[in-house]
Length: 251
Image 1 (cartoon, rainbow, N blue to C red):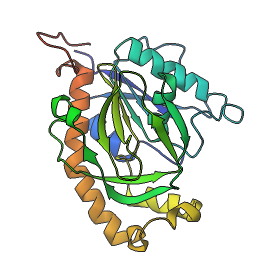
Image 2 (image 1 turned 180 degrees about the horizontal axis):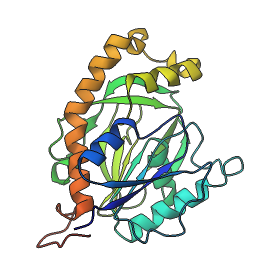
Image 3 (image 1 turned 90 degrees about the vertical axis):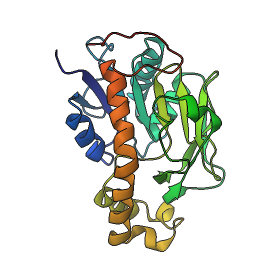
Image 4 (image 1 turned 60 degrees about the vertical axis):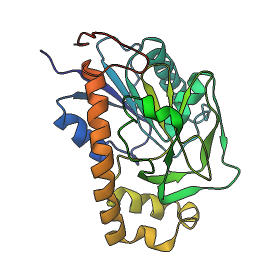
């Protein structure tokens, strides 16, 4: 059986696949990375069994400066319509929301930055990816915009006190995470150096090397199994939300 092929949309070089890529490769998933600033997005999802959309410093609707954002939204909308397992992170989650009828805006409470907790919502208990997560997992936050309104019919899966729409599912298997799970300490430190104004919103010790290394060990303990479940979804070994009965592999 061939390895499932996953399309990775990368809006910015500042947010690479990093640990997420390592975890997916370890799960036997083949990755096709498309740096959207430098390479045209595919016309369709033919030949792909899953989609990942990463983050970036631009806004989800900043098409004048980044016209390829429209292609990313188109592919994410197609993924929902075709029930292709999708994992969209930070900007990716905002693009997913905007592509499927939600609303994105600049966060009125300012940047959300640092190693923080999110809390699962009731709907997470029945979700194939979220059910086994701790109730309040640690995540890495570094964003200025928010998903203000979820897409119609979306399942709300996790919240934070500052911005409630932290994780959601559109359709049966397209997931948006406002937070980051893919980072390394070095990536986070590079973001803080490039955007010191946003970084100043976090507690100062959140950018200490030792603190970040410990936090990322905690992230891996929680989120690597989550990514493993996403890989099972891509391989057709895990039933999407709302499905029952026997499912054949997708590849």
